[in-house]
Image 1 (cartoon, rainbow, N blue to C red):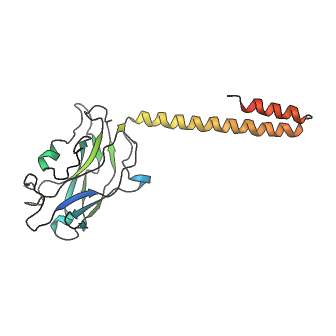
Image 2 (cartoon, helix red, strand yellow):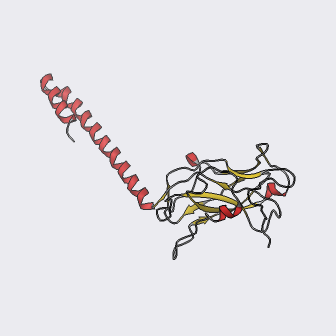
Image 3 (cartoon, rainbow, N blue to C red):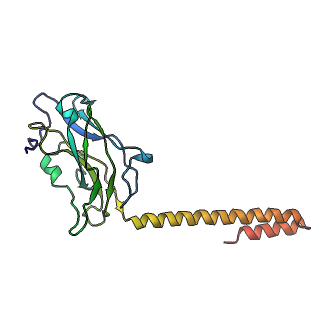
Length: 217
């Protein structure tokens, strides 16, 4: 199998096109282990292949139907926002699982473009991001090995994000539920005070009783 060849810092192909992969969707944050990786508001995560010279989606040619690998990158990759990285620079920031751990990212780890457009399948992180240098990950896309011979297609990356342990999500849910329970209890107490005030013989007594009850915590 032959991999796509690249020239350092040279993105334009022989036909003058500047082929670039892009994520068109932002991730829904925060992310937790064992949780599904989704776009904002639960939407699908869309990706496109564009010609950087025109900004248009590449809808024809073999590149428009290429197979892509979904990988995990270090969060500090390309912090300087230099879009002209090389394949070697990209590959040097790929993150693998810790020794003795399951694969870091599981699910549909490949996606095939159709007329330059694709949608990620189900993805799940099995480990948090606290153990790497930047304490953050990025998702990345690259052309699968064995295709696009002689054509440079610049890889894609998301913004950096943190992945927390699933137990952190449980703790957040518990705290949220506890907060709403307290709110409901206080509303119930206030309502009870109004009911008492209707039956109270003295309006002054009822007002004082309501005030003292509202301030109970």
